[in-house]
Structures are given as C-alpha cells and as structure tokens.
Length: 585
Image (cartoon, rainbow, N blue to C red; front, side, top):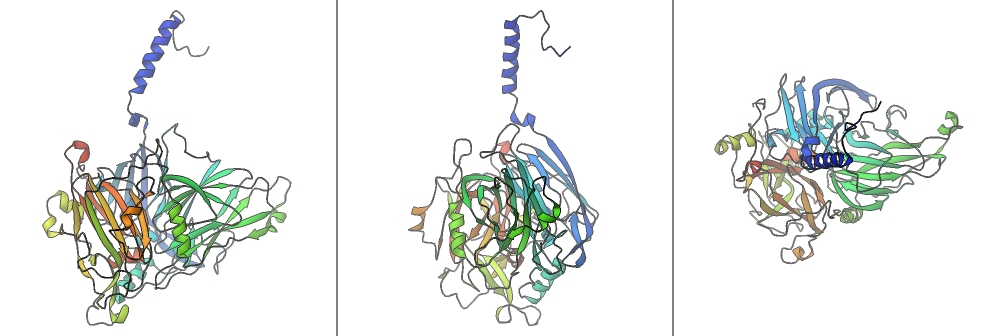
C-alpha cells in the first residue's frame, strides 16, 4: 500500500486546510534554508607534468593541472580547506565572488590575509550571495596562478531556470599559459634585471596546448570537445592566462554570448569573442543538425596592444561530432578539418565593437541597479613607468632603468603584513596611508606625447570610503612607454561599465554619453589602449579591496591599489571578525 498523507477518516475540507497551512509555512521559510554547505579540500602539492616534451615539477591543487572544478549554487556556503605542502607561500582568490562581510576569505596575499606558509592550512569560508554563473579561482601570490587555477561554477538556485535555452550539456574551457621554465624564476629574473619577462611557450585549453605546437601530441595534448548533432551546449569560457588577452573562435560555428563575469547579458551572436585575463564568458553553441563529415578547430591567440614581447602562438582544441553508428574510426580520421579565421593580433577595432555589444539584461528578474547619483568621483591614470636602477647595476628597462607600473603615478608596494588585519586591529599607521590621490598629482596630455620624466612614485596608499558611498571611477590609459590595454580587476564588487572612449577623457562632454540604463556589469574591464573607461559601483561591502591590472607582469610592477570601505551602522553592514585560523605573517 502507498503512503497516505492523511488518515482515511479526515474530510476533504480538513485536508485542503492542512495543505494550505503547509503552503503558507513553506512560503515563510527563508530561501537560505534550501541552501547547502559544501566542503572542499585543496592540497597544495608538487606534481610532475609534461607538456611540449618538457617534464617539470609544478605547484598544483590535489596534483591536478588545471585544478579541480568548484561547484555551488546561489545561496550555498563554501568551506574550502587549503593545506600547503610546498615550500612556496600560497593564498587562493575566489575571483569574482563578492565576499559580502567575509573579506578575510578573499585571498590576495598581504591584502586580506598573510599567505599560508609551508605546513600550514586555512579554511576559506564564504557564502555565495546573489550571484550565479561562471567564475574561477586562482593563486594570488607572485606568479603561482600560472598553474594553480580552476573553474568556479555557480548554478542558479534549485528550480530557477537560465534566462536562455536550457543546454543539453555544459563544458568548461579554461585558458592558461605554459612555460617550459619555472614562472617563479621568470618573474624573479625580470624583477632583478628591471627588464621585461620571458614570455610563455604555449597557451593552453584545460591545460592542453594542442597540435599547433612543436612536440605536442595531437592525441593526449589536445582538448577534444565531443558533441552530438542538433544540440545546444553551454561553453563556460575562462581566461586564466597570466599576461594575454585572447581571441577565441570555433571554425564554421556561431556562438551566442549569454553571460559575462557571471552576469547575464542581452544575448548576441558572434563568430569570435575577446576575453581579457580575469574575464569569463558563457556562450551557447548550437551544433549542426546532421553529422557534418568534418571536424573543427577551436582556437585562441592573443590580442596585443603594448610594445613588449609576447607569446605569438595559437592554442587549438578540436570540436568533434559524434559519428553515425555505422561509421568506422578510420573514416573519422580522414574527415576534413576546418580552421577559424581570428582577427589580427592588434585589431582594436574588433575589440571595441565586441565590448560595445555587451549589455546587461536589465529586466525585472535581473535588474541593472546602476547608481544614478554619484557621491565621489575619481580619475585614475593607469600605465607604465620606470624606477631607477638599484645597487649600481645596469638594468634592462628603458634607458637603463627598471620597468614599473602605476595608478596615478603611485607604484603600489605590498606591505609585510595584511592590509585588512592592520585596518581591523587599528595598526594602520605602520602599514599604509589613507590618502591615495583622487586625481593625478601632475596632470599631463595622457595619450599625447609622453613627458620626459617617466619615474613613478612608490607607496602603500588606500582610498577610504564610507559605507554605501556611490563611486564613479574613470580609468585613463597613458602613452608613457606605449599605450596599452589594461584589464583592471576590482575585488569585492561588481561594477557597471557606463562609458568608454579613445584619447583623453573629457569630463565636460563624455558623461553626457554614459549608459545608465543597461550597461554591462562585471568584475574585470579592459581600459582601452590609448583610451579610458568609466565605471560606477556602490561601496556596500566593508573591508579592504584590491584593484589591479590582471596582466600579471603589470601587477608585479606595481599597477595596483586598494579601497578601504568602512563598516556601516547595521550588523549586516560590518566586516565579520577574523577566523581563528587566519594565517600569520
């Protein structure tokens, strides 16, 4: 006999009353009651990995390269225990997670925490609030993110559909870079000599360089995405490369962009897309209705605007259709292989047109809450510069100097203790100054003939914001040592990209063209080469929040700064106390 919800003697009216009371009760259970707590364990360990005929010992999570996929739902609590078994200090950043009130779990070393030392562990404890989509996690100390990275997939709440066609299958593709040398030695040498760093030897998709490189096996070293005809696939694309923006395309296929940086966008179709390091893009791939008697290259190569050397190579994966049941494996190997056409390496026109297509959904379910009024305006120059050569040596930077990079001509120096700890425990005087300039100290023609003096100032300065300050920030590229696109990443917030343009920003004319209705909302934005970008955000998250160029060499050179958002008055507007296992410096 089946389960009876009511005894046979009860009347239908009583049963209806009980069901009504149950419905009302469930209606008042808070949403987080359906959320889960998910536990992960990250063992930071060395692993021998072979690519391009080079076997080397690399720092990994759980021996995997790339690292494991983290999956959660909107509303879930994540507890990720990181245990350090290597000689390097380590910290992990959950790129794009807001970390509301949990700045201690954000991850950048010497900003929100001291790094996890050898033999030590730390539990990153945070809740995913109001976010869903594709993000990623990566090491946030020195250049360790070259091998320590992986996808972070946030599914919608149970029962909440995507605002686009439900995909048949989801496929994460994470782009990276491979060095035959040790990337820690590469950056150490660059910082010692003052010159540009040696570039990577290959780009990778899911850790694989593909068949276009010397000594890269077509079989085991190539990503193959196997699909069925007549289906819709969701590709979760992540640019985890260190120093390169990337074009991506699949031969003979159109992609529909539906999300960027874990924010749904107004869908649009494109043959090629562009992603800066730190950016993610979700696309729908509609496969051909019948077996196409062909295979298709998926390729990525850099978009380059600067004057420095770069890895001018192409990573390729293969889109493979499941053959009809009567086909033989021999006939599959003889299929024609189509290759996509990617834009020219310096195609800024394509880059501009692509980024201009990105718009927030801005509907009732997913509104674009663009700050309409502004409490504080900031104007930051971002670009390269120089430092004098140290210790009477001859340096390999411009005219015998050392390369540097700066925001408002301040090259940021990380302290020896964590900024957030210094703030929280009232020890800021010894660690940072709260007087980061709101505007350039010495204005000049930013995109015109550069000044003769390219030296930067050095310091550890923060912008201090009262809770709930509405901020407008214009970031201006400079022509010092060459104009260049800079992907700026802001921790702890999403922001709205309300405007962008080329040349010098004009505060009298340009704001009239700002999009305050449906601008793209994201966590990483490219400052156009020789141009500017304007963003707005609400400082509703207490803590110290790092902002830096996601080209790792520029971060190493000092293109970084921090925002200190003070506590609000209410309990849910205050930074939570630090966890007991917070690493010590």
